Length: 128
Image (cartoon, rainbow, N blue to C red; front, side, top):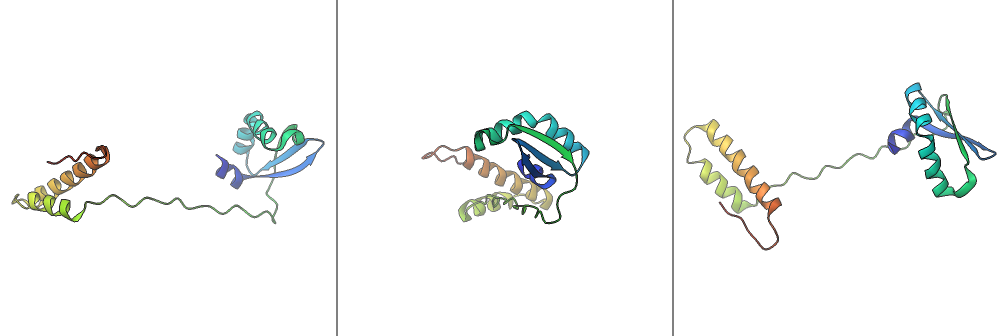
């Protein structure tokens, strides 16, 4: 929620311990109003008693308020067979005369080897 919250809201003024939080649409107004005790607890933990209450208001973001940059999620590279394993899988699949069945067997064996590699304990090697 923090990233979505940052895109849809911004802090307003802090007057007498009351922090105004502006949101840009009604669903977020509802969400933050319901979560205001949780937000207040987090603010109190971080800033002490400076913020004693939260008032959520509907309103546009200030034009000068820069939206936080979205951090693209990095995907891990898919696991690959090492060259020896790839040769073994290809050799087993090559024994089938039907190309579609050979492709299916190659995918199945590859997934099996990768799954066994992930489940293997250090020092133990599982072979077919």
